[in-house]
Picture 1 (spheres, rainbow, N blue to C red):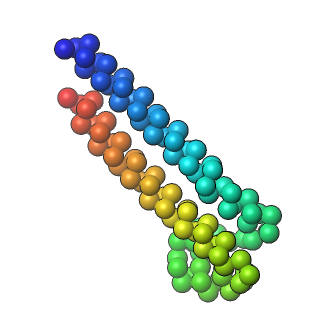
Picture 2 (cartoon, rainbow, N blue to C red):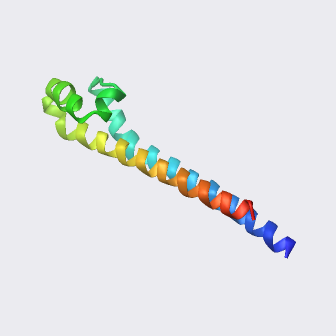
Length: 102
């Protein structure tokens, strides 16, 4: 029984590692494509503007009207990525505490 428990803990830790590797690849592949284009076009904004819809529309989209679609796609990916990251941390935390504290 002890060997089985240790084996399950090892499998869990490997699974957690795999989830974080997958998440890292997701960010690099999806979000950084948009970021590269924004940098090439010299589009600048800050996190406060990105997380506040009113500031986003009033300051960023008005400053770069020709790139609204690109900007909105980038913002959407950042917000989704942040939500997924928080969800993964929450699920991993609960899973680890449930299994490792047994």
